[in-house]
Image (cartoon, rainbow, N blue to C red; front, side, top):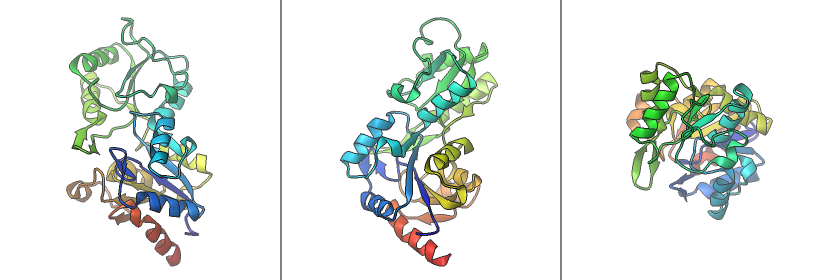
Length: 267
C-alpha cells in the first residue's frame, strides 16, 4: 500500500447500515490501520455527534476514536463561525448534534418571532414537517442566509431507502429563489479539511463511498482517487446515470485492502 498515505471513508452504507457492521468491514479497517495508513471517517451523518458515532463504532469492533471522524455538523460549525460570526441561526435537523456545533447560536431562533441570520438545514426526519419548512421558507424570504450540511436525497436503513434533506432543500431553494452553501460532502472544502487533518495531499488519498456523486465523483473532482462500493445506497441505475465514472468499483469495503495492494503493485 506504499502509494497511498490516506484513506477517507464514508460510514453509513460503507462500514455500516443502521449502525450494524457490514460483512468484513471491521477486519478490512483493521488491516488498513495495520498497514500504517492515515484514516478519516468522513460522513454527512447529522443525527449523532462525533463522540457518539465513535462510541458506537468502537463497540462494534472498529478501531476508531472521535478524532478519526469528520462530520458535516462539525464542518458547518466552523463555516458559520468564520463567515457569520455571532449569527443567530435556526437549525432544522433530526438528531442531537449540539456538541459538534460548538458556539453556533441555535438556541431560540424558531420561537423568538424574529428573523434569524442563517437557516441551517441538517439531516431529515420527523422535524421536517410543513410547519417547520414553511417557517424556514418565510425566514429565507425575509433575508436569512441558507446553509446546508449536505444535499443527500436519501440514505439506506435497515428498512430500506429513506428520504433525506436534499429532497426538501431543493424545494426551499426553488421557492425562496436562493441557493444554499453546502458545507458537507460534496463540497471541496469538506475533502480539503479531511486531507489537512491527515497531512496528506489529494494525490496520496482515496475516498471510499456508496454515493457515486457526493462521495466518489466529488472526491475525484478534488483530486482524490474515488472508490465506489456496491453496498448501502448504491443502485445500478444511479451508477449508470452518474455524471462521471468512478476510478474503481468494488462489491464492498471488505475488498478495499486487496484493491490497495494491487494498486500499489502497479505503481
